[in-house]
Length: 240
Image (cartoon, rainbow, N blue to C red; front, side, top):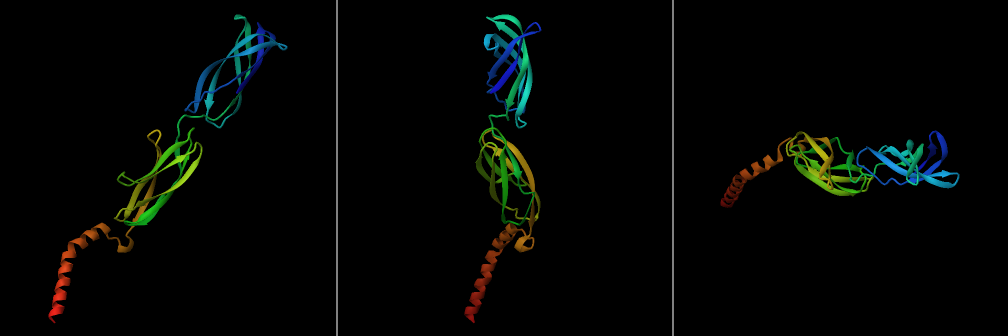
């Protein structure tokens, strides 16, 4: 609700006061939206309404936290649709934070580095904030060094609220330093609102730096020979 007050003038003579109210229900997704407004108030002499004043001003919507401001206004004074003078005064505007029609997500807590053994699973903690104007659904995703999504989790976050969650992924099978990303995918808009990189430091683990997958392949290749040796050993033992 916006209240207005001022003076009604004929030429330079103040003939009465302007009072009224203005309800501003507009909102915009941008941080500052300029709009030209035209509003109407009553012109009174003492308590007698003698006409109406049309006032014009430039209004804006802000996302800086809201507050109170005074706007200089001016316009025409009419009595029975006949212009008899000018109106001027001030408008006291109580404005608030932008009420956007969409959600928007920011990552406010995430890892910068993870140390893990080759081929082992690890868990990271992430906190996401909805700094948009409405509740929304966000999917937190982990992308590996190949830009593949290797873990994801979806959660609903209230407007202005935070949510913390954990995701589990598997480290590369080879030791080294890898650059991965965690991102906030806005399910409602279909856009990635925020993305942050983190480092995955992979060590050799229990096998001293040997690639586990390569080791398994080698074992499978040698398995027939190992079985043959075991059979020969059993046969030799039986003959003796």
